[in-house]
Image (cartoon, rainbow over all chains, first blue to last red; front, side):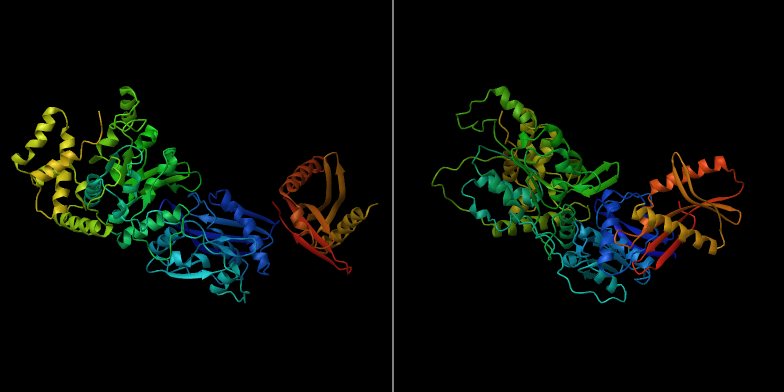
Length: 503
Length: 117
């Protein structure tokens, strides 16, 4: 007796998928199963899940010497989603399931009872399957919603291995089983928050609007309780809604991180707020076996909020320089190289000093301690932050005009449309992405307008690079006001929005 | 003699008959040395065959072949080398396994695997 079977699956490296052919050769010989083609521990253990699941179907698994090869054999394979394809290939070698049609990818983890369990990363797996030219994908029943988010791919759900085998043409009459449900989507902490909840702090709200309109990175400095976090959490609500591609990318990254996305695409930009005890790996991504995206990658097309930013270890903060520069994160590990998108908007919050009270007269910090506190932020990272605002505690009973999220997002959308029109054909979508030299060459401003900035440079209050930044912010401020080019007022506002850091 | 040892002896006898019917000539049975025991040594034409016999009463604890682990195959190879020191042989060498299931009904089911690794 000798049998041969084949099935197709996908291996993920970051968000990129590679088609994997699984070959099974069942020959006579002493009972043994060999899994070759660089399997990790999880793939090697699939043998036990597979044989138990096949036994539960009432089918006799090949009893001799079985070799399972995962090709390309030089690519490391990690994860439990290969289970289904391995089991089907074994069943094909045993003659239970008809041969592979070459158009169907199989994804899913097996339980010992033969039921199929949803796996992390189903969405990017399905996307990769569509890109690799597969017409159909078989997934666990619980993952059908997630996989169906991908256009141009027929998604078939199977609650168990027997059902999957029957779908693929095996003459079986599987008994109905309760499908294993996908874990519930993570609750959104920043949905349904309205900007109108913010009392006072007009300057900060305005800065937030400018940040949203121009995709500028923003630093907020203020004492504890001033409302920095409250403001930060309302930024995604006023950002433009994600387009279909961006939403799919965001959902894929979330799926890869083990958070199954909801069955309809979420168009609210993501909001990631890692704690300041975060390690470099949790922020950037990594891990042995499968390389998982970190907070910075999950914040793609959205907001990365670092509260108490000076408390982050400097080495961790400096990790953000690559993504801020290139919009991507590349992680090298022994198992391979993964590249994740990481085009996020950086939002930093900081106290004015270690005790948090500097500026209100009761600060007990030595000047040196204060300098050291901000010293961690300074340098290349802060260099990329266009907006720096002071957020102060609001006096009791403070009222005044409040802007709702609906109003602000309409203004932001209009400003973005103006900027997009101006930048058409350049590849940049918002003023915050435009480099200074290009701005000076293609959108020069009158010398008279630049005078306050030049004076600030002479005083030493502004660097030349800071001047570029101020000009960018001035353009965005003009966009928000619906004016063709910045005026003196906008330049003045831009200058004011660069003076957040004390001392 | 304990029942399981008797079962093993009976199994080896059944295996010898089976091999002879398949055209092989038994050279030696139950060869012992300090390192262990060879169940059957036989000639299949030119080829000298070392045979490991495993007998089980039913399949409740798995197929007899499942008990022939890689470690046992390694030991079989070592023993074959020792046997060859005493009885040099010119020609090819092979290792076989014979699995026997003795059902309660008295029926013996014999399976013969040629060329195990």
